[in-house]
Length: 392
Image (cartoon, rainbow, N blue to C red; front, side):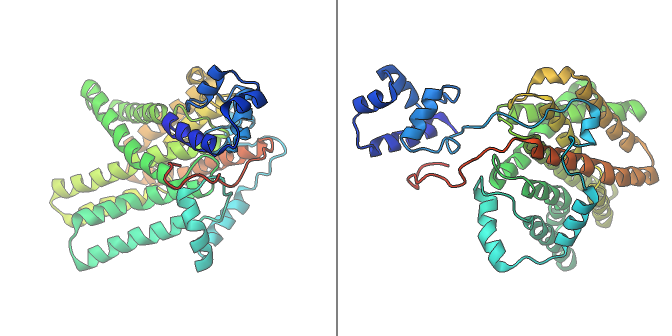
């Protein structure tokens, strides 16, 4: 929340008080200077008197940006990315069966009507069964199918297929979050802006590195693209106080998914222009979209940044952990996997995609399980009654 937004909310609550400023200062033992600072909109969440001031005038501290210190166990070694902490239930096959059964289960209209707006605009409403991802996937495939049958709408088909898998997977991992820090609107903005910026950084770096051929070129591609996305994640989400590592996973997944979607669209257009065959471009798009179930920038960026966030013992990302052996190993592994996927023949690419479909979602599942190592923290589930014109 911006300072000016917080200041306006505090101002509205102060105006509702039935006591004078002098009486308020007397009750809370505040000086006039302290009262001015607390009412300025600047956050002083480390100051217990500030918390008392906020609660006294009737504002929910979580609503104006307060975040509890991170209480989940920090990642200690690479093995932590594959095995949860002791005492945490680890049943990936059961979770997979549940997800697959949910895919073919029709949610009621009442359920969709009640929870869809909350998915989009609210925080702190708790976990619900994922269902928006199914609607998005079906809608995109319908757009592609209808445009393919009715007219050669190259741009429409290119966009629909390019978005189909990365965007759907992003919404799925978002829907598994408890939404204590996220809403879908912000995640989608990061999907678009983060994807575009990370591609821009990639092309800027390429101005200096060039495009070498062979294995060296593929290694360079892996390094440049993964570094560009990591830089984008650091720039856009560095200031967020992560209570759990899965939130970091979702936000970085958004950046990688945006990169993946736009890159796939670029591949499709280039295939049409280079071959002059519209059908060839569609095949390229469809093939890359299917492979992105197991291979793609969405997984790689999410795993790299979530590892960095998970190594941090505080709720802020500790960028000194960029030198941590676990982060370095994960970073190098992703770069090498990315490079080998680009370098290998088609049949090995398919095998790597199958391998990725098992390993990368499993790693994401472990990040999800880490939230259960958190200490229970009681949070207010409803937003305070503030004027409707105030920003959320």
